[in-house]
Amino acid sequence: MKVCLYIRLSSADKDLRFKTESESIANQRALLRRYLREHKEFSACEVIEFVDDGFSGTNGNRPGFERMIEFLKNGGAKLVVCKDLSRFFRDYMEIGDYLERIFPFLGVRLIAVNDGYDSDDYKGTTAGMDIVMKCIVYGFYSKDLSTKVKTVLTSKAKKGQFIGGFAPYGYLKDPANKNHLIPDPAASVVVKKIFVMALTGMTTGEIARALNDGHYETPSQHFHRLYPDSKKFSATSKANSWTCDNVYKVIRRREYTGAVVSSRCKWKGIDNPHTTLQDESEWIIVPDCHEAIISLEDFERAQSAILGEKKGYKRMKKDYLLRSLVRCGICGRVMQRCPFYKCDKNRFVENSPCPLGERFYEDDLERIVIASLSQLLQTVVDEDKRILDAAAKSHGSAEQLRRSILRIEQSIKQCQTRKMEAYEKYSDGKITRDEFIRFRDQLVSETETMTAEKNSLEERLALLEQSQSTELHDLAESALQFLKATDVTNEMLRGFIDRVLVFTGGRVEIVYQFNNPFEDTAQDTK
Ligand SMILES: [Zn+2]
Image 1 (tube, rainbow, N blue to C red):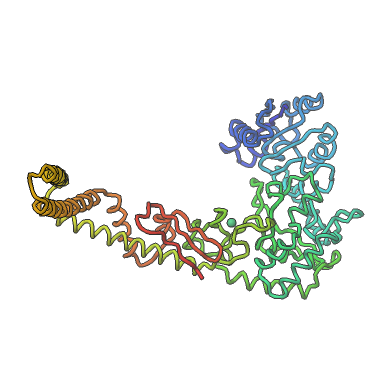
Image 2 (cartoon, rainbow, N blue to C red; image 1 turned 45 degrees about the horizontal axis):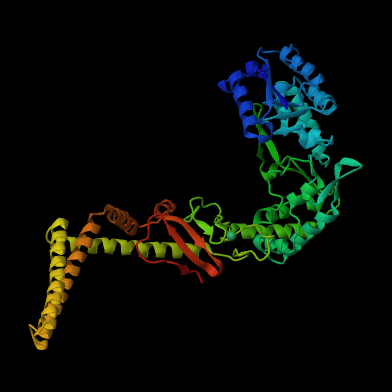
């Protein structure tokens, strides 16, 4: 497969003084090449570059662009990748021409990397054009024009016309009028169900659990089924599940009351293709534009129920104590934290051994982790002290101890030999039975004494060797610092703990960064 890269220093680079290093030909090339490398489907493509490096005015010549269009018309390639659409086209009219007519006719796919635009996302729809315009038009030099388009879109929004690319979950675009929404028979049932549950006081987590138990399609699964060719949500797993998050998003959608909500996003500026979320007070909300799924009263009541729940979260506290430590003991995944820790592994899997639906409260986990760690570290400190004290008491070097041990071992062997010799003498009739027994008992007693001495020396040697190993001693030093600290932080915990595994029933297992020289410190939260 062949791919055309189009690179251009646009008029904006000159006139708006945006000619920064990042806009240079080399950097555009690097950006586009990186994009191709990062997308497997393109990695084997043959690349043909078309470059316009003059600052052409809005009506200037673009020889590179024209050569590329000629190339595409001759079937040279079916894919064009550029940095952004404002660089690619000279004006708004040209975009319409190319995106709606020429490229679809030629079967050419266009990707604008920085705009996040891929013409395949809008295949077979013209509905997408509005949103495409909205996203990119601001990047044009022709500011008047973009203002004009924005005004048109804003006035559409103010009239309550739906201007998004796709209908929100729960609705479909009216086939008779693309700016009007009609309820989606399947999804609207789920939306109603969610609100009913929220109004009975269920938390988003409980609602998500109930929906998963009932095997309800998630918004992204539903979207994939409706628009199997669209790239939107393509990053989401098709087997994803309901979570606090997507339930929350449904409950927050004012569209269900029949309102059209626009201007959720705004553009950061003429040079920035990205959008930011607008403050809710700046949204354009026009009520009674389409059939409501939820009454306004129910909607408001659900908001306060859900927002109240949110306030209870410690979500804002960024450096929470157990950050990136708590994992499901069964599947090993990082546990979802809000409003309590839980395993979020695909909840459609029945009989999963994971503790699905079980809540592990942050306070409990924090308490257990700190208590277990402190206890272990105290043991480490005590043990280190014991070894050092013992070593101080033991006289002589390890080498001397080893020699003494060897000497005793030889004496013990000699006793054995003497015992054998005595037995032979007794067998030969050279000594009496009584003499032999007396002699033998004496040797046994001597051996016992020497063995005890040998054991004691060996123990001293072991302690001495241990005291010379710095591993335990180093650990004991940092343990002491931890134990003396007045406040425990996430960083401190992560210095000692690799992960905290949580199992069903609230059993907790701590995996330490160091080799725990002592026992298993599993504990229970309940
Ligand atoms: Zn799990």
